Image (cartoon, rainbow, N blue to C red; front, top):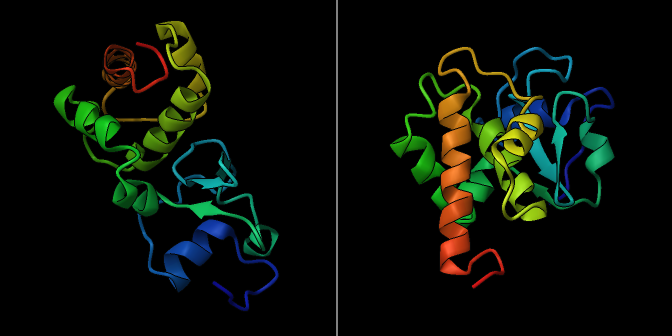
Length: 150
């Protein structure tokens, strides 16, 4: 898609205000909470720190796109089943970051999951249920061969 954007418009504000893709949230506006996480060219970035104009020519994947494609369906299911969400404000960022982790490390340890998610804040659930959910998906994918193992 092509669009004219103001030079100072952040990527997350462009997605939310111009495209009405409101799944990514604006929390701290300083890049520390992870609520605004978006995938740009396959890597999770903080949408509040990236200008929309910097994304010119890039492949952008919002939480809506990841959900619609089914690529995070097992993570969404595990978050629900493991009670890894309450208010949902952090959930889109947690899901995209967890997806990126599992793309790079098919069978992370709990410590590796914890470290990878350390830049995403949750004020409701604590983190154990989130770590449980990611570990469950990793184990399920390993058992199904989806992560490249038989």
